[in-house]
Length: 136
Image (cartoon, rainbow, N blue to C red; front, side, top):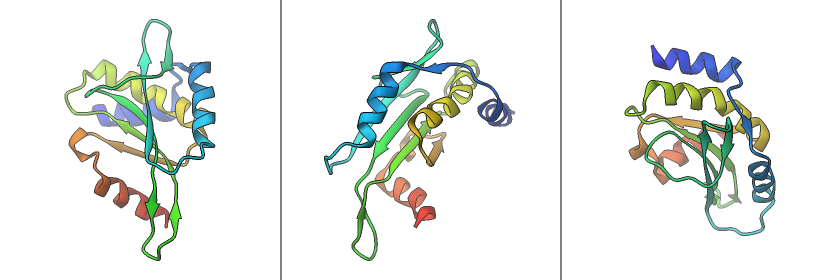
């Protein structure tokens, strides 16, 4: 049931705004020159109704990840991925707030590679490569 509610909220409801400092950080991150893997982790902040940075948690988390992806033919690309981690142990209220905030962050960061996981243990390089295989 919560999965259905999350999908509905994530497609139609705006729960919060993306903090201006996070928007600036995401823009700078998009055009960075480094070739290493890097991430920005962020969270929903209830009192201000904003998505902010930085944040690291085993709970619901938004991750914008720049990944050095080596294709089978040897080409190298640096896809910018959005990963929404919503582990099964999160409180239903928290899951709904994050689901309702997800689209605002995806739009603010202008991301097209959007992935979701319900199990934090899935966040491995192999998992990410499998997700990116769709975009080849």
